[in-house]
Image (cartoon, rainbow, N blue to C red):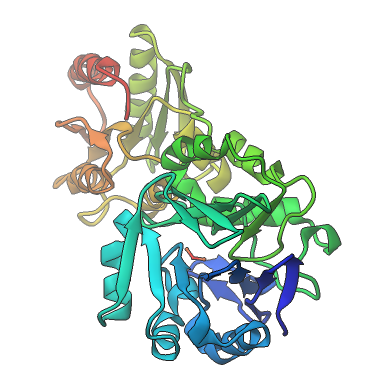
Amino acid sequence: MSAIKLSDNIYWVGVKDPELKVFDIVMETELGTTYNAYLIKGEKTALIDTVKKEFTEEYLANISEIMPIDQIDYLVVNHNEPDHSGAITTVLEKAPNIKLICAAPAVPFLKNVINVEADITGVKDNHTLELGGKTLVFKGMPYMHWPDTMMEYLQEDRILFSNDGFTAHYSGDTVFADEVTIDLDHEVYYYWDCIMRPFSGYIRRNLAKLDDFDIAMVAGSHGPIYRQEPRKYIDKYKEWTEDKAEGKNHVAVFFASNYGNTGKLAKGVAEGLKKHGFATSINDVTEISTDDAKKLIESSTAVVVGTPTFNGDAVKPVWDLVNLFSTVYSIGKKAAVFGSYGWGGEGAKLVAQRLSGLRMKVYEDNYRARLVPSEEEMSALDEYVGKIAEFFKAGKKK
Ligand code: FEO
């Protein structure tokens, strides 16, 4: 596909990948995607992002429709994931004097992508690049999607180049959102859910950086460009990344139980925490939906996970739950683990280790009761609940 003019001296020079079926190993992309790149011509010229390596020739052909690549002054590297950085080395070969601009934290990423000497400038918030009649203002946007990620605002044309932010995987006849017929709201949410949701806490803080820009167009690195309602998905991101746990004081107790023993402990934990002032919910992980579990994790001050031990391990439905913690923003969330067991009792310990590995704050002791919990063991559970209640109350999650 050829280059497309967005405004005076501003062009889309990206490529389409309609056959892409899976992105980042886990995200199904039945509508394909695009790898958007842009060319801005002032007295000097800046290229914004490259494309996936396999599409390098098409990308170069689009650029050459506008100007010879060896006359481009700057390549802005907003993000080093290979879907946007895959053609950088070829650009460097074709334009050896080109200057690379990236966010300051992205410099080591970029060096490890290109593995050759190059003129790289790492920029901080509000750094400006004067092209002569076109001015770019940069904003670091860490974790939208990687720590390296950056966006920039073109002052004269009021365009925000948002890289992965606010995008959707879609490839169609048009590059403009106001001309597509798909349910774009659904696709943008799906992209956020799969790609951005685990970084919600970071994104929430980043979004305020865009408040001062008078945005007329949002041009991201995937899917359609927003010419109408340009702030629509910025506002949606603000809504989706809100701290859902704030002010709720809710602890979600998750458990699996074959013979009712871990279930009895779960009930004891939930009732005990209520006495210490928490709202609680008891959730059987074999029954709760993935979406509900994710929402509960996000809206909870802390979580408590109960697992029996089968064959020296926690049980699969509990591991399935544990695997959800890395799909939402759970860094720093407090947790405790308990379970009934027959002889070894390794399950609770393994789950606690995994949650710690996910950078959650896990109470140092796990509570375990052997087979059918006795009255003494339920009393000991009450004491344990008192300790985790104090742990949960001590400071807020970061
Ligand atoms: Fe589209 Fe995070 O790359």
